[in-house]
Image (cartoon, rainbow, N blue to C red; front, side, top):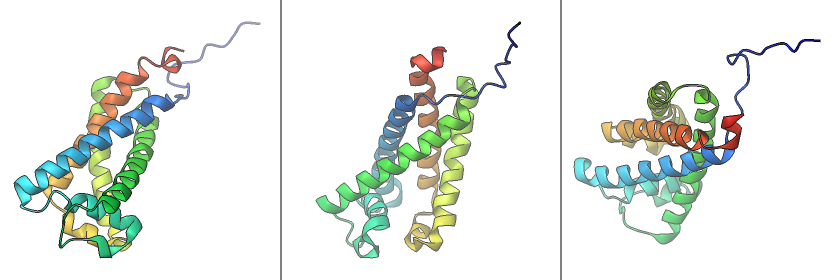
Length: 166
């Protein structure tokens, strides 16, 4: 009996999990660095304001600025929370871009980052109202870069992954 040929378009995409996780870590780091550099440089706020906003997701509004100073405990909670979210978002993005070429994946990554910004700063403000104070072009830019870096990194790493060769 002849085997039925399966079109590449009908195959499901197997996520290269390690590539997706690493893309979340790398894109998450790029996002944090951008925010912590650009917020003081362009908005005149403390570099510790973004981590405090993230930490407040778990720790509550009492950790919000002022003062937006360094606090080891708050920063550690923020970093853990941020990287968990970054990995989850990168896995979702990997599911979307798995079969795309690099250029299309980066474009979709940029749109995905913008969508994350809209969800985070307009949707989640019902639960975390302090996110409204960070509705600005720096946050938009950092989210778009997150999506682009996550997409690029996933495609590069997944291309070397054994599942991607199958």
